[in-house]
Figure 1 (cartoon, helix red, strand yellow):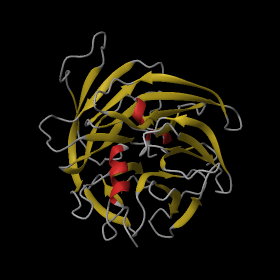
Figure 2 (cartoon, rainbow, N blue to C red; figure 1 turned 90 degrees about the vertical axis):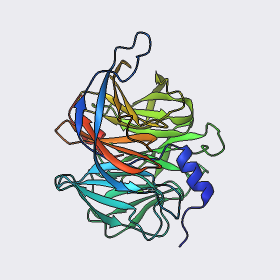
Figure 3 (tube, one colour; figure 1 turned 30 degrees about the horizontal axis):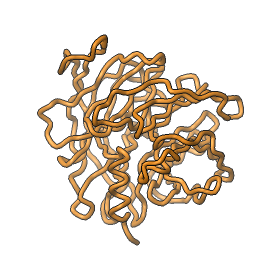
Length: 339
């Protein structure tokens, strides 16, 4: 089976899906002058381990979707892994070892998340417009959802589950054309019904429920903004507004995680850093990778240990894929564990 074509890989790179992991923690003073009126502190992330090198076949490594399993191991997907290399890996954070979990000759997986309904691992296949699922050990692959939604195919990027196990997917449709055709799609937990909750979005990327499951935070990559969707009892959108405008410069907004205190962790494509905001939009902190870490360009996602504050961010670039770590501002929950 063929790997994703070069145009697809280029689109994935543009989408800010470059990521991978590392670990360690230290807090220090600002690494540069803050913006006028910005009192956010700088948190220095520390390297934990290297997970991948640039693949000769694809010319890059794009790692995403860090998520803890029930045994405390951290799973990661490699978006551009060729068919003979692992596309899902399991990291033992205690032993600092990594082993393959799943590979195939087709998927370009951009996120990973465990379902609270059936306990399976769900992956988004950006290139083929599908959501697939695996048993927790990587066996028994199944296509959960495939096909058009409201007459248009999806480019599914990230996933958030509600408490009943229904999926909320960021659809980055329109990214490669530079059009604002992105969507948020809700898929029932049985995979039988898909509904567009919001459309005309600018390359929808990150998606996460708030700490009370009252609404969704979504990032729009090509507009560098974070929007908030208030949800009704049936999961429908009752209101929508731009909540935070990110001054990213050449960097763009990627995946989002939310801790138990409601703080948002906004990953960046184009800069190895994560921005932390509170629910009111105040910039609380910037998590930075040390400047001496060459060849790293993005820090697009993070997983916070469930019930703890140890955070693992995925960092990548021409220098390979790494795991870095830092102390989060709040404890980890489902909304800061995968997606």
